[in-house]
Image (cartoon, rainbow, N blue to C red; front, side):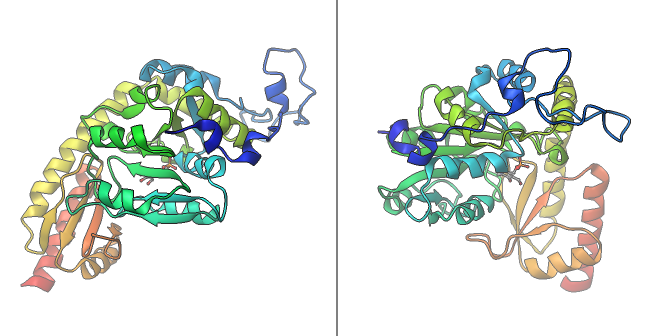
Length: 353
Ligand SMILES: Cc1ncc(COP(=O)(O)O)c(C=O)c1O
C-alpha cells in the first residue's frame, strides 16, 4: 500500500522551502519595498516590474470550479514538463530509485529521469497499445517510486483502459502519474475526479494542446493536497510568469472557443484519416483520441524526407518501440491538411508508380 510519508525523499520532507517576498506578504499594500523589484517600472508599454503570484491563486480558483476539485489540489507549472520533473525530485532518490515507463510513450519521462539520475525501467505496451500488466509487474521492484501512464498516449493516440489503471493504482506502492495532455480531445472522462479516491494518483494536464497555449508554458498537476503541498515546496518560487498568468486567465474566460476548436480538430482528424487510407503506402492508421494520428507506412524515412523537401514537418517515430515505419502526424487546419495530402499525392506519383 502507498504511504506518502515513506515515499517522499527524506531531504524533501526535511526541506525548509524558500520563502519568497510575495509568499510572505500576499495582501494589498500601498507601497511594496520588500522584493528588490524596480519600483520605477518596465521599459515596455505594460509594467512587469512586480513578481507574479507564486501560487497562481486566481487561475487555480477557476480551474478548481471547472474540474470540481479544490484549489489546493492543483499545481500550476511552467508546462507539464515542470510537473514531470518535480515528481522525480519529490519521490525518486538519485542512483537508488527507479521509474517505470511504458514505451512507446512521451520521451520526456525518460529524459527527466536521466537528468535526475534515476534509472528508467520499461514495460512495453501490448500490440494493441494497452498497458501490459504482466510486463509491468515483472519490471517493477521495491525501489520503483513512479510510473507514468500516458492516456491518450503519445505517440499512439489511444486511451488506456480506465479501470485497469485504477486497479493497478490501488495496489501499487508508488505514485501513478497519468499524463492527460490530450484528454480534451477524447470523449472519455478524465481521471481528475479520482484524486481523492487514490492517495498515489497524480493527473497531469496542459494548456499546450487543446487550449492552444503551448507558447505560454502552462501545465497542471492534480492530486490530493498533501502531494500538491510537496510540489509547492520544491518548485521555484515564481515558476509561472506574469504574462503567462494573465493570458491564461483571459483564455479561461473563453472556454467556448476551445470547445469549438476541439470539434473542428476532431472532424479534421476523421477527414484526414479517410483521405490517408487511399494511399498505397499507408498500411495502417491507428485509432486516435488525440490531435494526432500514428500512421504506419511502407517507408517512413523516405516519406519523412520527401515531406521535408515540401517544407512539411511530421514526426518520424520509426526508431521507437512498436512503431517501425510510423509517422506521427498532428492534425492541422483544413488548408494544412490539404497541403499535406497534395504533397503525399506527389510522393505516390513519383515513388510508387
Ligand atoms: C504526453 C505529453 N505530456 C506532456 C507534454 C508536454 O506538455 P507541456 O507543453 O505542458 O510541457 C507533451 C508535449 O508534447 C506530451 O505529448
